[in-house]
Structures are given as C-alpha cells and as structure tokens.
Image (cartoon, rainbow, N blue to C red; front, side):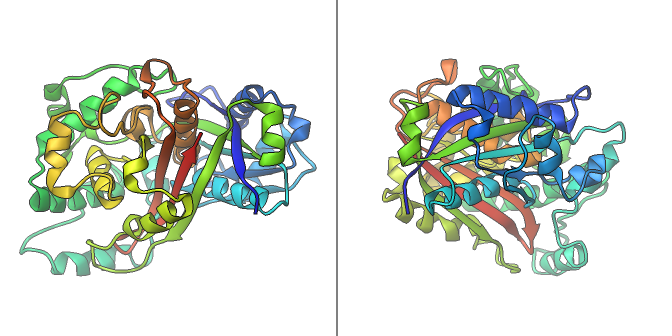
Amino acid sequence: MQDVAVVGVGMTKFGKLLDKSIKDLVREAVEKALEDAGMDKKSIQAAYVGNAVAGLMTGQEMIRGQVTLSAMGIDGIPIFNVESACASSSSAFHLARTAVSAGLYDCALVVGFEKLYDKDKKKSFRALGTGVDVEMFRSFLEQLEANQKAGAKILGEGSGEKRSVFMDMYAFMAKQYMERYNLTQEHFAKLSVKSHRNGALNPYAQYQKEVTLEEVLQSGDVAYPLTRMMCSPIGDGAAAAILCSKSKAFQYTAAPVWVAASVVGSGIVSGDTNDSLTQRLRPKAFDMAGIGPEDIDVIEVHDATSPSEIMTLIELGLCPGDESPKWIDEGYLEIGGKLPTNTSGGLVTKGHPVGATGCGQIHEIVKQLQGRAGKRQVKDARVGMTHNGGGIIGADAASMTLHIFKR
C-alpha cells in the first residue's frame, strides 16, 4: 500500500443555484480542482462520483457520473457512481483513496454534487426522507418512543412535509444530551452564532452574514430545542478533490495533504442511543493515523443541526462531555480556540447539498492545512479531520466516514 495525497480541490458556492444544471455544477468544481492541482483532465485515470438524490430531484438515474463528466470531456476512464445519502462524496473519496493506495491508479478524481432546490419544497423533503428504512422507520420510532418517558414523542406534526424527518431525530438526540451534560438551548444557539461568524468569512457559504444569539433563538421553532438558524438549509452545489500516489504528488504540488486515515462504517438497527456509529469508528480512524484525539488541530463535523456539532465532538473523544458547556461558553471551538471546529461555517451556514457535503468538508481541511483559508485560517494547523454521516438505520447513522489529513 502506498501513501496518498490530495493535490487539488475545488468547489462551487453552495446555495440556491436555480440557473445551474448538475452538469454545470460538476464542471465548475472539477475545473477548479484541476486548476488547483495544475493538472490536465487527461491525467485523470479514474473518477468516483458521489450523489444522493439526483434521480428523485432531476430524473437522472444510474449513470450520473458518466453524464456529468462526459459533458466536460472526461470519459473513457472508469467512472464509479457512489450513493450513500449525505455521506455519498466522502464514501467516494474513501474508494478513490483505497484504489490509489493499492496502486490501481496514480491519479483519481472525486466529485460530489447535488441539486435540492425545487419550486415544490415538499419534493426536497420527500427526497431527503428516503434516507431511512422506509418500510420500518415509523414502526421502529413507535417502539423507540414506547421506551421513553410517558408522552415523549420523536416525530412531531408536519415532519416530512414542513421539514425533514431528520430534524425530529436530531431534536430527540439533542434533548438527551441536554439532560446528560447540562447543555441548554442557549449553548446550541451559541454554536449557531459561531457557525454564522465563520460562514461570513467563507465565499463558498450559502449564508455569509453574522447573527446574534437573540436572532438565532427567535428565528422560528423547528422541533425543540432546534430553531431555524440551528438547522442546515437544503442547497445546490458541488465539490471535488484530486488524489495522487506519492510517486506523482510532487509533480503537481509542493504542499500535498496526506490522507492519514480513511474509515467507513454502516450503522446497526438498535434502540441504544448511547452506542453510535461515530463512537465505534473513532478508534479505527485514530489507530490508522497513528495519533490521538489530542493531535487534531482543526475539524469539520456533520452539523446538520447546531447541537450535532458538540454531540459529535463528544462522541469522537475530542471534547469531554461534562466540560462541553464550558467549551462552548469560553470559545474553545472558535477559529482561535483550543479546537477550531467547522471553520467553513459548517452545514448550518455553508449549506448542505447532501451529495457534495463530504467533499466540501475535505475542501476546507485541505485549504486549512495548506495555509490557504484566508480570514478563516487556523494558526499552525498540521492535522485535520472530517466527520460525515448519512441516513438513519434504527437510531444510528446509516453510513459514516471519518478522514484524517496531515501536512
């Protein structure tokens, strides 16, 4: 097995991009990645394309990678289509890294894309709602509710129509963490304020405006403790990365970012909300990278909601649960803090075009480790991490990827 490096990254702005097709989005992200690497598209030997719901949203099924890449002259090579809910492009990245490490290819392209905006908002929510076991989801939640305190509900009125069903699940989990670690709705709101402050510095972010604590708390109830500004918006966008073997990496960049760990796992059907896929994958990622949680300088986590940010840091062993309120109150997660988290603005502010999200996170970490993050730059960042999950199976994430990068 050989070392693998990221030599180029590129992405579109995330947001409401009604005038751009899936071909337009992929072309823009890939061309930026090629330019970043100083590479001609003819040097790409294989491509891995992550997407979640293009079939449901645009009607394009089965050959999404071939359709989008051939439109920009990338064809004839192996093109693999990868679908794994919100973890689609990070799963594609894992496959590309594995292939290059095994010596199958010297240069591989990874791209993730999504178009979620539609005149009919229910269409988007219905598409996102398929990231569960559609046959068993409702009955499983009824069983889970039966084991909770009397009267406790998980799915509220309007779930799946006025909002994604995932918001109800995140709210349910957030309340458990509130009871366990003395976290409050205000703590979650502070995380949203931080995300918006970081997003205001990111030209690729969907929202680029700072907000106040009061604005977050008064932004409209979604499912307690979540308010609208604590929830990631749907969006359109694409992001790409180019991977090279060690023997080729320095031909394209003097500052390669090495993939120190790439771990993927699937959830289990269980009602035990104290045992998560993130927790089970954590030791595998750190063992593969040969480091510990204390060595992470910057991280992008899957904050589909603001509470998810601190919940994930606890599950990864990066933040002690009983100290989590202090970490939020004292700014430990800020760009200049002890553990800068979601410097891009995270999903809450940067946006969440699900098939592009994983590569979007990688884009941020690569830029941070290369010292190219501009006003968002973390001082002396040498080790970065991404956490990207997708779908729900039982009460667990259906799919999860953890990546650790070093410079």
